[in-house]
Length: 152
Image (cartoon, rainbow, N blue to C red):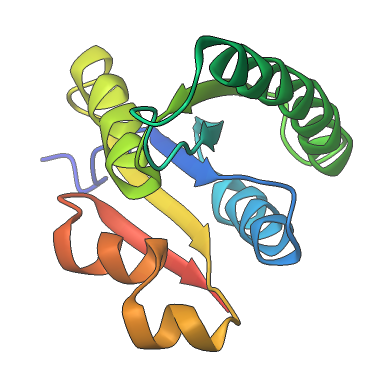
């Protein structure tokens, strides 16, 4: 009889990343969570537009350009933070409601790797307004079907 437990499934970590101090802490925590485990990190930047109904085509094009620039900067920043800590990572950009898009990104990963453990990691907001009206971490805590780590 073999007493060895089966190997743990790979861990796929999705980190919400916008370059803020809480997002940097979340990315650092994700790298620590992955240490000694098989898996990878997906750094997810979500460009949030509250409503495009009132924006002109030119305004939307300008926002898209801003998102492109932000993506380049955030991809470089994430790479710099992960260098030497994590070899297997990728970067995705999505648009929409942030919490919803982070869950959707995790869902896509779960579809591609159904036996792996999926974890969402986000930084907590220090904004008093977010504590009163809700934030991405609060929304995820209430609605995410995935393991969730909220980094202070």
